[in-house]
Length: 307
Image 1 (spheres, rainbow, N blue to C red):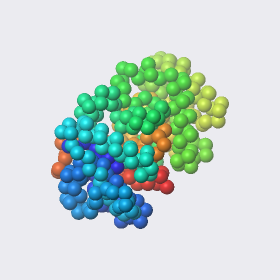
Image 2: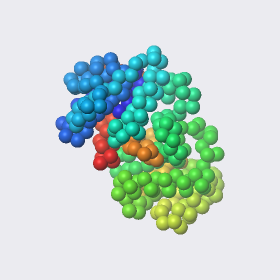
Image 3: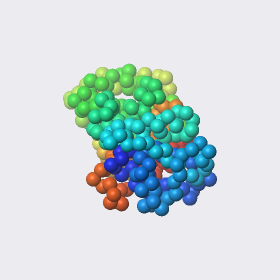
Image 4: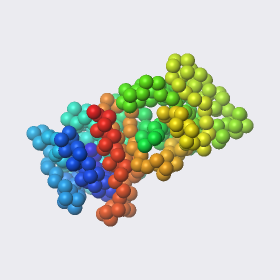
Protein backbone atom coordinates (compact mmCIF):
# COMPACT_ATOMS: atom_id res chain seq x y z
CA UNK A 1 0.00 0.00 0.00
CA UNK A 2 1.18 3.54 -0.71
CA UNK A 3 0.31 6.19 1.89
CA UNK A 4 -0.87 8.88 -0.54
CA UNK A 5 -0.36 12.60 -0.09
CA UNK A 6 1.40 13.17 3.26
CA UNK A 7 -0.99 16.08 3.93
CA UNK A 8 -4.12 14.05 3.15
CA UNK A 9 -6.47 11.50 4.69
CA UNK A 10 -4.59 8.48 3.31
CA UNK A 11 -3.11 7.36 6.65
CA UNK A 12 -6.45 7.82 8.42
CA UNK A 13 -8.46 5.71 5.98
CA UNK A 14 -5.70 3.10 5.81
CA UNK A 15 -5.62 2.50 9.56
CA UNK A 16 -9.38 2.74 9.98
CA UNK A 17 -9.75 0.09 7.26
CA UNK A 18 -7.04 -2.19 8.62
CA UNK A 19 -8.42 -2.04 12.15
CA UNK A 20 -11.76 -3.19 10.77
CA UNK A 21 -10.39 -5.81 8.36
CA UNK A 22 -7.51 -7.35 10.27
CA UNK A 23 -9.52 -9.74 12.45
CA UNK A 24 -10.76 -11.51 9.31
CA UNK A 25 -7.56 -11.23 7.24
CA UNK A 26 -4.97 -11.88 9.95
CA UNK A 27 -4.35 -15.49 8.91
CA UNK A 28 -3.95 -14.63 5.22
CA UNK A 29 -2.50 -11.17 4.58
CA UNK A 30 0.60 -9.20 5.47
CA UNK A 31 0.37 -5.47 4.75
CA UNK A 32 3.35 -3.34 3.73
CA UNK A 33 2.78 0.43 3.72
CA UNK A 34 5.23 2.78 2.02
CA UNK A 35 5.23 6.34 3.32
CA UNK A 36 6.47 8.81 5.89
CA UNK A 37 7.46 6.77 8.95
CA UNK A 38 6.62 9.50 11.46
CA UNK A 39 3.15 10.05 10.01
CA UNK A 40 2.39 6.33 9.80
CA UNK A 41 3.46 5.76 13.40
CA UNK A 42 1.39 8.73 14.52
CA UNK A 43 -1.77 7.36 12.94
CA UNK A 44 -1.07 3.78 14.00
CA UNK A 45 -0.87 4.99 17.59
CA UNK A 46 -4.01 7.10 17.19
CA UNK A 47 -6.00 4.10 15.94
CA UNK A 48 -4.31 1.65 18.32
CA UNK A 49 -2.79 -0.48 15.60
CA UNK A 50 0.55 -2.21 15.95
CA UNK A 51 2.95 -1.63 13.07
CA UNK A 52 6.52 -2.79 12.59
CA UNK A 53 9.34 -1.41 10.49
CA UNK A 54 9.78 -3.53 7.38
CA UNK A 55 12.39 -6.21 7.05
CA UNK A 56 12.26 -9.27 4.84
CA UNK A 57 11.96 -11.68 7.78
CA UNK A 58 8.95 -9.89 9.30
CA UNK A 59 6.59 -10.62 6.42
CA UNK A 60 4.04 -12.83 8.13
CA UNK A 61 0.24 -13.01 7.90
CA UNK A 62 -1.48 -10.59 10.23
CA UNK A 63 1.45 -8.17 10.38
CA UNK A 64 1.29 -4.53 9.33
CA UNK A 65 4.71 -3.35 8.20
CA UNK A 66 5.85 0.07 7.10
CA UNK A 67 8.69 1.01 4.82
CA UNK A 68 9.77 4.54 5.83
CA UNK A 69 10.67 6.97 3.08
CA UNK A 70 12.42 10.19 4.05
CA UNK A 71 10.51 13.35 3.20
CA UNK A 72 11.86 15.68 0.52
CA UNK A 73 9.78 18.56 1.85
CA UNK A 74 7.67 18.51 -1.34
CA UNK A 75 4.38 16.56 -0.96
CA UNK A 76 4.23 15.85 -4.69
CA UNK A 77 7.72 14.32 -4.79
CA UNK A 78 6.97 12.40 -1.60
CA UNK A 79 3.75 11.01 -3.05
CA UNK A 80 5.64 9.78 -6.11
CA UNK A 81 8.35 8.18 -3.97
CA UNK A 82 5.73 6.25 -1.98
CA UNK A 83 4.14 4.99 -5.22
CA UNK A 84 7.47 4.05 -6.79
CA UNK A 85 8.53 1.99 -3.78
CA UNK A 86 5.14 0.30 -3.52
CA UNK A 87 5.28 -0.64 -7.21
CA UNK A 88 8.85 -1.88 -6.72
CA UNK A 89 7.66 -4.19 -3.94
CA UNK A 90 4.80 -5.47 -6.06
CA UNK A 91 6.75 -6.01 -9.28
CA UNK A 92 9.52 -7.68 -7.28
CA UNK A 93 6.91 -10.15 -6.02
CA UNK A 94 7.38 -9.08 -2.44
CA UNK A 95 3.65 -8.34 -2.58
CA UNK A 96 0.75 -9.80 -4.52
CA UNK A 97 -1.07 -6.56 -5.19
CA UNK A 98 -1.09 -2.82 -4.68
CA UNK A 99 -3.60 -0.50 -3.01
CA UNK A 100 -2.90 3.21 -3.43
CA UNK A 101 -4.17 5.96 -1.15
CA UNK A 102 -5.15 9.26 -2.84
CA UNK A 103 -2.72 11.92 -4.04
CA UNK A 104 -3.28 15.49 -5.20
CA UNK A 105 -2.71 15.48 -8.96
CA UNK A 106 -1.80 19.15 -9.23
CA UNK A 107 0.98 19.04 -6.61
CA UNK A 108 2.32 15.75 -8.03
CA UNK A 109 2.36 17.23 -11.53
CA UNK A 110 4.71 19.93 -10.18
CA UNK A 111 7.20 17.13 -9.53
CA UNK A 112 6.31 14.92 -12.53
CA UNK A 113 5.32 17.03 -15.51
CA UNK A 114 3.22 14.44 -17.36
CA UNK A 115 1.41 13.07 -14.29
CA UNK A 116 -2.35 12.78 -14.89
CA UNK A 117 -3.13 10.10 -12.32
CA UNK A 118 -2.12 6.83 -10.69
CA UNK A 119 -3.40 4.72 -13.59
CA UNK A 120 -1.16 6.20 -16.26
CA UNK A 121 1.84 6.68 -13.96
CA UNK A 122 1.90 3.11 -12.64
CA UNK A 123 1.43 1.80 -16.18
CA UNK A 124 4.54 3.75 -17.26
CA UNK A 125 6.53 2.38 -14.33
CA UNK A 126 5.54 -1.14 -15.38
CA UNK A 127 5.88 -0.63 -19.14
CA UNK A 128 2.19 -1.40 -19.63
CA UNK A 129 0.88 0.06 -22.88
CA UNK A 130 -2.84 -0.52 -22.38
CA UNK A 131 -4.03 0.17 -18.82
CA UNK A 132 -7.79 0.44 -18.35
CA UNK A 133 -9.58 2.35 -15.59
CA UNK A 134 -12.47 0.34 -14.18
CA UNK A 135 -14.85 1.08 -11.31
CA UNK A 136 -16.35 -1.71 -9.26
CA UNK A 137 -19.35 -1.39 -6.97
CA UNK A 138 -22.08 -3.70 -5.74
CA UNK A 139 -24.25 -4.46 -8.75
CA UNK A 140 -22.13 -2.51 -11.23
CA UNK A 141 -18.90 -2.63 -13.20
CA UNK A 142 -17.89 0.16 -15.56
CA UNK A 143 -14.91 1.53 -17.43
CA UNK A 144 -13.84 4.83 -18.98
CA UNK A 145 -13.15 4.95 -22.72
CA UNK A 146 -11.26 8.22 -22.22
CA UNK A 147 -9.81 9.19 -18.87
CA UNK A 148 -8.07 12.30 -17.55
CA UNK A 149 -8.37 14.65 -20.50
CA UNK A 150 -10.20 17.95 -20.98
CA UNK A 151 -13.80 17.62 -22.17
CA UNK A 152 -13.05 19.62 -25.33
CA UNK A 153 -10.61 16.88 -26.41
CA UNK A 154 -12.88 13.89 -25.83
CA UNK A 155 -14.58 13.70 -29.23
CA UNK A 156 -11.26 13.79 -31.06
CA UNK A 157 -9.93 10.89 -28.98
CA UNK A 158 -12.76 8.47 -29.75
CA UNK A 159 -12.33 6.24 -32.79
CA UNK A 160 -13.84 2.95 -33.89
CA UNK A 161 -10.51 1.21 -33.29
CA UNK A 162 -10.19 2.69 -29.80
CA UNK A 163 -13.62 1.34 -28.84
CA UNK A 164 -12.75 -2.10 -30.20
CA UNK A 165 -9.39 -2.25 -28.44
CA UNK A 166 -10.86 -1.00 -25.17
CA UNK A 167 -13.67 -3.55 -24.99
CA UNK A 168 -11.43 -6.41 -26.14
CA UNK A 169 -8.99 -5.52 -23.34
CA UNK A 170 -11.78 -5.31 -20.78
CA UNK A 171 -13.31 -8.57 -21.98
CA UNK A 172 -10.04 -10.49 -21.64
CA UNK A 173 -9.36 -9.25 -18.12
CA UNK A 174 -12.81 -9.50 -16.54
CA UNK A 175 -13.25 -13.04 -17.82
CA UNK A 176 -10.04 -13.97 -16.07
CA UNK A 177 -10.59 -12.00 -12.87
CA UNK A 178 -14.35 -12.29 -12.35
CA UNK A 179 -15.12 -15.59 -14.02
CA UNK A 180 -17.44 -14.35 -16.77
CA UNK A 181 -17.89 -16.71 -19.68
CA UNK A 182 -19.64 -14.32 -22.05
CA UNK A 183 -20.29 -10.92 -20.45
CA UNK A 184 -22.75 -8.42 -21.89
CA UNK A 185 -21.56 -4.85 -22.53
CA UNK A 186 -23.47 -1.59 -22.78
CA UNK A 187 -21.84 1.52 -24.31
CA UNK A 188 -22.84 5.06 -23.40
CA UNK A 189 -22.79 7.29 -26.49
CA UNK A 190 -20.88 10.54 -26.73
CA UNK A 191 -23.77 12.91 -27.45
CA UNK A 192 -26.99 13.74 -25.59
CA UNK A 193 -29.68 11.15 -26.34
CA UNK A 194 -26.93 9.07 -28.01
CA UNK A 195 -27.00 11.43 -30.99
CA UNK A 196 -30.81 11.29 -31.40
CA UNK A 197 -30.53 9.50 -34.78
CA UNK A 198 -28.05 12.06 -36.05
CA UNK A 199 -29.92 15.20 -34.97
CA UNK A 200 -27.35 16.04 -32.28
CA UNK A 201 -24.27 14.24 -33.58
CA UNK A 202 -23.13 11.48 -35.91
CA UNK A 203 -20.45 9.76 -33.81
CA UNK A 204 -22.83 7.07 -32.58
CA UNK A 205 -23.69 6.10 -36.16
CA UNK A 206 -20.29 6.63 -37.79
CA UNK A 207 -17.89 5.53 -35.02
CA UNK A 208 -19.69 3.48 -32.36
CA UNK A 209 -21.92 1.33 -34.56
CA UNK A 210 -19.07 -0.09 -36.70
CA UNK A 211 -17.19 -0.95 -33.51
CA UNK A 212 -20.21 -2.75 -32.10
CA UNK A 213 -20.76 -4.65 -35.34
CA UNK A 214 -17.14 -5.81 -35.36
CA UNK A 215 -17.18 -6.84 -31.69
CA UNK A 216 -20.35 -8.87 -32.25
CA UNK A 217 -18.72 -10.57 -35.24
CA UNK A 218 -15.88 -11.83 -33.01
CA UNK A 219 -18.25 -13.13 -30.34
CA UNK A 220 -18.34 -10.26 -27.83
CA UNK A 221 -21.84 -9.34 -26.66
CA UNK A 222 -22.36 -5.60 -27.03
CA UNK A 223 -25.74 -3.93 -26.78
CA UNK A 224 -26.87 -0.77 -28.57
CA UNK A 225 -25.39 2.64 -27.83
CA UNK A 226 -27.51 4.33 -25.15
CA UNK A 227 -27.77 7.79 -23.66
CA UNK A 228 -26.20 8.60 -20.30
CA UNK A 229 -29.59 8.93 -18.59
CA UNK A 230 -30.58 5.44 -19.78
CA UNK A 231 -27.36 3.64 -18.86
CA UNK A 232 -28.10 3.22 -15.15
CA UNK A 233 -31.72 2.19 -15.41
CA UNK A 234 -32.59 -0.93 -13.43
CA UNK A 235 -33.44 -2.98 -16.51
CA UNK A 236 -30.03 -2.21 -18.05
CA UNK A 237 -28.16 -3.02 -14.85
CA UNK A 238 -29.92 -6.39 -14.78
CA UNK A 239 -29.33 -7.17 -18.44
CA UNK A 240 -25.73 -5.98 -18.85
CA UNK A 241 -22.65 -7.02 -16.89
CA UNK A 242 -20.48 -4.06 -17.81
CA UNK A 243 -20.98 -0.43 -18.85
CA UNK A 244 -18.49 1.55 -20.93
CA UNK A 245 -18.64 5.30 -20.34
CA UNK A 246 -17.31 7.56 -23.11
CA UNK A 247 -15.68 10.08 -20.78
CA UNK A 248 -14.78 10.62 -17.14
CA UNK A 249 -17.68 12.68 -15.82
CA UNK A 250 -20.42 11.21 -18.01
CA UNK A 251 -21.95 8.70 -15.57
CA UNK A 252 -19.15 8.37 -13.02
CA UNK A 253 -20.49 11.07 -10.64
CA UNK A 254 -23.85 9.27 -10.54
CA UNK A 255 -22.12 5.92 -9.97
CA UNK A 256 -20.00 7.26 -7.10
CA UNK A 257 -23.08 8.78 -5.50
CA UNK A 258 -25.61 5.99 -5.95
CA UNK A 259 -23.41 2.88 -5.76
CA UNK A 260 -20.87 3.71 -3.07
CA UNK A 261 -18.55 2.38 -1.88
CA UNK A 262 -16.88 2.33 -5.30
CA UNK A 263 -13.40 0.99 -6.02
CA UNK A 264 -11.03 2.04 -8.78
CA UNK A 265 -9.37 -1.02 -10.38
CA UNK A 266 -6.59 -0.82 -12.96
CA UNK A 267 -6.61 -3.54 -15.61
CA UNK A 268 -3.69 -4.26 -17.91
CA UNK A 269 -0.96 -4.51 -15.28
CA UNK A 270 0.88 -7.69 -14.26
CA UNK A 271 -0.53 -7.35 -10.74
CA UNK A 272 -3.73 -6.25 -9.03
CA UNK A 273 -4.01 -2.52 -8.28
CA UNK A 274 -6.98 -0.91 -6.56
CA UNK A 275 -7.69 2.41 -4.87
CA UNK A 276 -10.53 4.30 -3.22
CA UNK A 277 -12.64 6.44 -5.55
CA UNK A 278 -11.87 9.84 -4.02
CA UNK A 279 -9.10 12.39 -3.53
CA UNK A 280 -6.83 13.21 -0.56
CA UNK A 281 -9.34 15.60 1.10
CA UNK A 282 -6.56 17.66 2.65
CA UNK A 283 -9.08 19.94 4.36
CA UNK A 284 -10.33 16.95 6.41
CA UNK A 285 -6.94 15.75 7.61
CA UNK A 286 -6.66 15.20 11.37
CA UNK A 287 -10.40 15.59 12.05
CA UNK A 288 -11.18 11.85 12.31
CA UNK A 289 -14.13 12.36 9.94
CA UNK A 290 -12.86 10.68 6.77
CA UNK A 291 -15.10 7.93 5.38
CA UNK A 292 -12.91 4.84 5.01
CA UNK A 293 -15.47 2.58 3.29
CA UNK A 294 -14.06 2.99 -0.21
CA UNK A 295 -10.53 2.21 1.02
CA UNK A 296 -11.84 -0.80 2.92
CA UNK A 297 -13.61 -2.02 -0.22
CA UNK A 298 -10.42 -1.45 -2.25
CA UNK A 299 -8.40 -3.63 0.14
CA UNK A 300 -11.02 -6.37 0.15
CA UNK A 301 -11.33 -6.39 -3.64
CA UNK A 302 -7.54 -6.54 -4.03
CA UNK A 303 -7.34 -9.57 -1.79
CA UNK A 304 -10.22 -11.32 -3.55
CA UNK A 305 -8.71 -10.77 -7.00
CA UNK A 306 -5.22 -11.82 -5.86
CA UNK A 307 -6.68 -15.05 -4.51
